[in-house]
Image 1 (tube, each protein chain N blue to C red):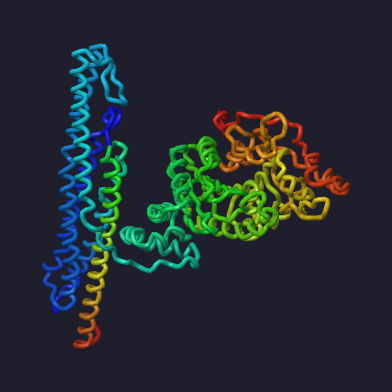
Image 2 (tube, one colour):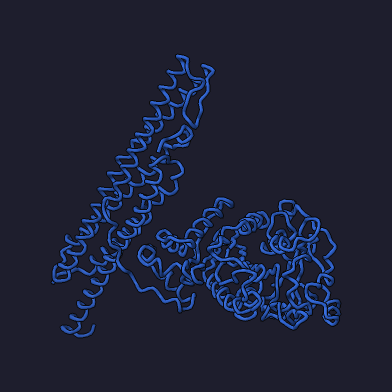
Length: 546
Length: 93
């Protein structure tokens, strides 16, 4: 790899020294451990057990000393690099001063002194070429030195204790994990990653390490999509991103996975996002902007001392497209609801603090969320449903079984056609004129359902049905502002912020039904129909949040 | 057979402590934290070395820890045998 001047400027001698020092220090610890093991032969222990102990411990001692020698050799090889880098950077500064003094310039990408031709330019160019040659030679030396670490296989790791099966309750798994020493946990992560990564009850940070170890050896569309999502979310948020669920072969190869931006185990506020139709791991949903949009706004909305986390949960088999016949049926939302509830129960077990969890379902995912709550005791403090085609097992907000103070919040744009698939009478699915059920249950935006509806109109002149259905997480939107406020624990302030919206009228809806009007005529029931959307919403605009 | 259970138990404890030290001070963590200051081909080489150091340290620490467990078990067994022999020879104290 040829180096550029910008690379040399970024080169940090302290970073090289830090690695050399850490390696040398570790080598000393390894020798000290070998010396302790050698004491087995010096304590006057005799007999058959002693003979066996000497044999087994002796072998480990040999491996320890080999590792110590190797690590020390690497430390010794790279340590002088720090001073050499400092010298190269100093030479570069002198050359740059010379270039400036001669009223010349440097093309920093090509490493060329401009304009060329003069005696001074030629001399400076020679100096620059020599400097880059020296930098590349040092880079090659460091690369070779570090390559020594691969000279021997990684020593055998003891198998360790049996890992509990996936059928064990998360609390039991958590107790087992906590009972292991730090050393045992490391050994388990090194040898049993495939069993630990998706085991409910293992803390998220450890699941992440296990799943990433498995991911590192995986190829294919799902693995590539997960790798990209981890990177994209990290770049967009600057936060740690954790892979808490990774099953690339699930759902016929579409994959089952969940990533968390920020650690939900230590977060004060966690939002769990559940997508709808046409989304899966291979489609790249985990890397979509909605995840980072929610996280970045949540970090502003929450109190500074309250860390936040956003979990992008692609943990169920969503309908493949609007043409997938399963999109009009609740089956996938029910099996998905059971999976979602199970995963959230596991998160509740590993949480290290009292935290506020909001589950946000979009489109078919909102039906899945409703079923997780109404059918499978999903642990959540608040629920947000956006673009909801119906709440299936939940006839009203009370069916969600939320704890005291918990609420069902709803965002339904008046121009979002998917939300009119739901029944508008608070309890029955939408019925089209020929009697075929097209919706997935009650409309949570209708009065009588018991929800809190927030403003979620989309900007733009004229209705754009698909944009109205997909814009709920757009930056600056009424919807994202409200979702984030709820997720940050401030749902009760929506009214104060002027963000609540009137429900759709069940009376008008009944009349429409009695007249035989189809569901797509339902916007006449919506008081939000003629209100223009406001834009530019952000929690940064609120000087005092509370 | 000749063994002092207390000496064995102390050695077992020392093994466990050393195992934890091996894990805590392994250079893979330091390398990962400063990799942004490395450039060129040595940067991916450092990332690979860090991964290997982490795996190696985990394996060696587990081995030392396991020896600690075995020594502790040997110390307990020796102590119990000594107590049993004492009871058989001299009766319960």
